[in-house]
Image (cartoon, rainbow, N blue to C red; front, side, top):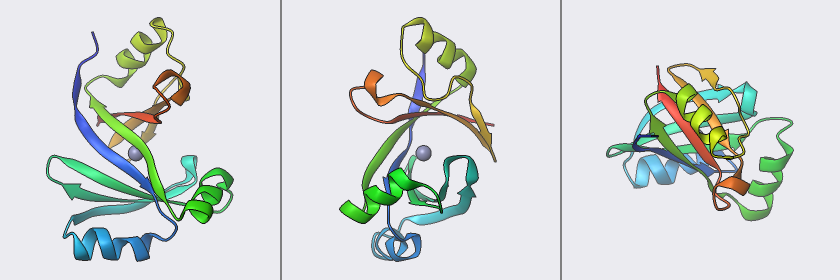
Length: 134
Ligand code: ZN
């Protein structure tokens, strides 16, 4: 049985991280936790603390044509929902046993966390990320 700990973060695609920081950080007063580039996903991200969860602002890096086109056309918007779990490998196995299509069959290891995405065709059109703190 999969046990979801909480909504870890909500990802928002933005055209310009520094520009968007003014709203989320300066106006709303959310504390900036860290900024990093994630080359495996061709994004630069900023995490801002919002109570028990985070807001993750993502901006496309060079060569990220899908998100690049999205932020250019829409100016940004909701990108994904991230659920935190305790054992991401076990979760991925259980999802596959249930016929859920995954974008990552094994988790990607990033600083402080392991993540994997579900194919939105299996999650009601929502890009869903699983996250394990390491
Ligand atoms: Zn995320």
